[in-house]
Length: 286
Length: 283
Image (cartoon, rainbow over the protein chains, first blue to last red):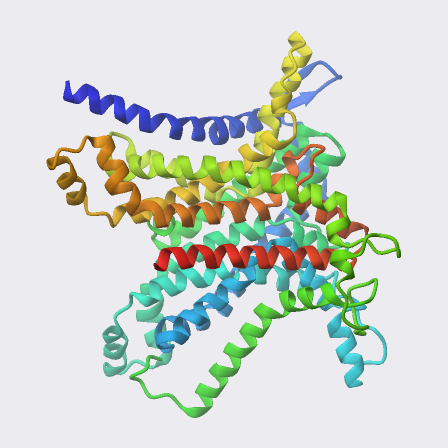
C-alpha cells in the first residue's frame, strides 16, 4: 500500500517534468536534426541527404562566419574573465561590510535593462554622431566626427558588457568561500603573487571560473542583437545566418542544418571546457 | 592580495582606479540612454537642447508622438506583459514540482534526469526557438497539408513564444526554488506530521511558507527574463509582436528619443520589481 502511494506521487511529480523536457526540448531538437537531413526536391517531395551540410562546407561564407563566431566568442569569454576577476576579488575579499553589498548590487544594475537597451546605449555612445565622437571634438583631439561603431572592437565591447554579470556572480560566490589562511600560507611558504594566484587562488575558484565561462560563452555564441546592431558589414555572426534562412529565405532545411552545427559547436566547447578543467556540469551549473 | 598581506600604495591606487573605470563602463550606456529620453531634439545625440517630456506625452499634433500616444509600442508592451504572465505562471509551477522531485524524492535515473533538466541552459536561445518552430509549426503545416486540420495554436504566435521561453526559464526557476528547499529542515515537516497534519496540510502550512521567498524571487526573475528575451522570441512571434521585437524593428528604421523613453521605462520597471522582491525577502 505504502509503496504504491509513493509510486503514484513519484509519477505525479515526474509527469510535468517529463512533459516539459520531452515536448519542449527533446522532440523539437530531434525534429530539427531530422529536418536538417531532408532535401526538398520539389514543392511536395522530400528526399534524404546531406546537401545542407555540403553547402556549409562548400560555401566559404558559411564556415568562415562559423569559425569567426567561435573564435570571437572564445576571445570575448577570456576577456570577460580577465576583466571580471579583479572586480570579483575586490568584492569577495577586500571590500568590507556595506560597501561589499553595494558593489555587488552595482554589478547587477546593467541587467535591469534588456540586451536591446544595453546595445542601444552603446550605439548612442559610439556612433558617428554619438557622445564619444562629440566629446573628442569638443576636446579638440579630432577634427571631424569619428565613427566608432560598426567594427569588431565595438562588437566585443558590447559582448563583454553583456557577459560581465554572469562572470562576476559565480566568481564572487566561489571566492567568498575561500579560506584566507590558504593564501597566507602560500605567502609564508615563500610564494610570490604569481605563484599564489596560480597554485592556490585559481584552483580554488575553478568551479566559478568554469561556470562563468560556460554561461558567457553560450550567451556570446548565441547572441544576435549585439553583433547585428553594432557590427559592420564584415562582422557577420553565425546566428544571423540562421535567422536569415528561417525568416527571410524560408529555407528551413538549411536553417536547421546551421542550427545543428551551432549546437554541436557549443556542446563540444562546453564539454571540452569541463574535461580540461576537471569539472562536471552538475557541479558548475546546479 | 588579501587584507592581511601588505600592499603598496601605488598598487592600491591603481586597483581603485580600475574599480572606478569598471563601474563607469557599467553605468555609462544606461545613463546616456536614460538622459536622452528627455532631450528636446528629434535625434538622441548631442548637443543638449533642453529638457522635455514630449517623448512620453506628446500626442502627435506637432510631429512628435510620445510613448503614451504610440499605439504600436503600447500594444507591444501589453503583448509582452501577457506573455510574461503566462511564462511566469508555468515556470514557477514547474519549478516547484521539479524542486520537490529532485530534492525530496529518491528514484532511479535521478542523476540523468537532473542533467536533462540543466540542458536548456547550455543550448543557445536561438536554437531553442528554431527547434520549437520547426517541430510545432512544421507539425501544423503537415496537418494542414495532409488532413486539412488547422492547428493555429502551433503557428508562430503567442502560445509558441510562451512555450519557447518556458523551455529555459523553467530550468532557472527550478534551480532557485531547489536551492531554498535544500536548506529546509525536514524535521519541521515531520513535526507537523507527528502533530496530526496530513502530508498535504503539512506541505501547505510548513514547507510552502518556507519556500515563499524563493518563489517570489523566481517569479520576478521569470517575468523579467521573459520580458527582455529576444533571441528565442523573435523566431516564434507572429503578427502580435512583443516589445523587444517591436523595439528592434523601430531601431532598424532609425533611432528616436521615443526608444530612449521606452528603455528608461523598462529600466525603472525592472528596478522597482527587483527592489520589491529584495524588500520582501529581507523581511
